[in-house]
Image (cartoon, rainbow, N blue to C red; front, side, top):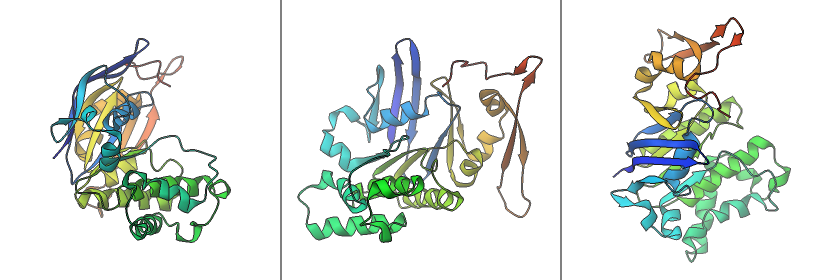
Length: 276
């Protein structure tokens, strides 16, 4: 049971967003996409969600092309947390979580309410359910969006697919770790969980499998130990990484980066100089 891409390519206005990406994501592991800005992580996540049509190649779920699913069927299968969070929504928190249950329209009201309460509890929002979304802090709004995703797939048949684009971006340290611990729990429960992260140290701590992207290509995959210790990482990011380990914590890895400096200043990664 895998979510897979097959020679996936997408080029927009001469800019390559994805280039011949073939990869499969199975349930049980927390899959984390890493790479510089503009390397294709979000484009790949959007393609996996069925929200970005391939220029060529295909995306499949358990061998069936994703474009063969209708919108409701797709929404019952996968939920996506986008990178950019809505800042203003004229709804209460519980109303936004209820929007996540729209794919299950017609279910018993008690089922909807139970799903909302479970999601709110997982995201620490029980006491904010009646609050106006617009009055919450940025981090609290991000937790509302995470809870909406959780509510959407609450009770969905195993495995469901969670696609999380920079889920920790708005969070304080506690919620960064709580969010990724929850993502790992979902994976261990038998779901497919794919996450984009920029913090390589969080990736080292929580990921089961890492996928390094550069210029729209998937250039390296493997365990955190394999990927984060590979010299290719330094070349892709344009940094000189120092790798530190804690003898008291088996498998621990801390990365400290330093830009590569040339005579006339910082040297950007050579493979894609026009990254945003």
